[in-house]
Image 1 (tube, rainbow, N blue to C red):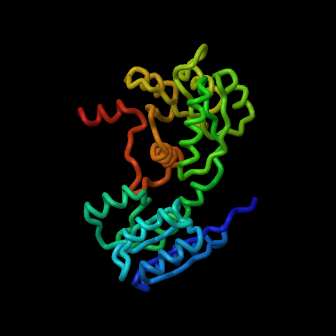
Image 2: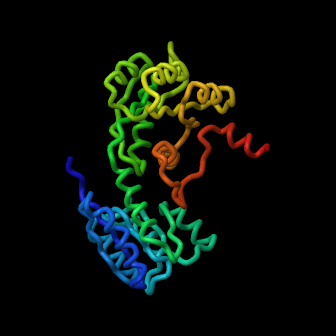
Length: 273
């Protein structure tokens, strides 16, 4: 199987920080072809982001000329608008952290960091860009289309199929190819909870996530009881999908990732205790 090249940008005005990042990248060179650009200032970083599509950018927050946050802000207008952005700094104040969240940066490495931390981020990127066959189950064509659009906006790479009922979903799942199911609760005939129970009879490994406009503990508790992995209250967005995928794949949560409970009643119970 051919894997596409990974393009990495390392922008830091200290040679030692660039060296540590490059050492972390080297860990994966036997598995993938990885192209690395090293620069020591913000303007050079932005020039590269404009010139070619960068997949992962390690950006120092305090570079001469353009600062890290200024580069991240300007990234929106480049070929690298969807790049995985990792901020590097000895510290991160609240204002900068808030700005980086707003700009959809991914993670933060606190100086001094180690090559192993960089290697883990590269491994996470490779996991994110693997193909995950997912089945959307909803009797509404409009909702299936909207859910597909949200999945396509995620950082993860999905092979998306659709089913308009529990029965057609089970026929599709008999192929054994699907890693995840995203199912509506309210469907005519067999609802999402019953479908989840049938899926669990087929496999304990398929990720099952329930979608519903309902905000009721009893529904979520029923979902948890039959072995559903998590609950997505409508409306949800690509950040919610990214969060559940990090949980499902047991990846470390990124610094700027969305924080959410698998089920809302878990959050209420933890706050009450």
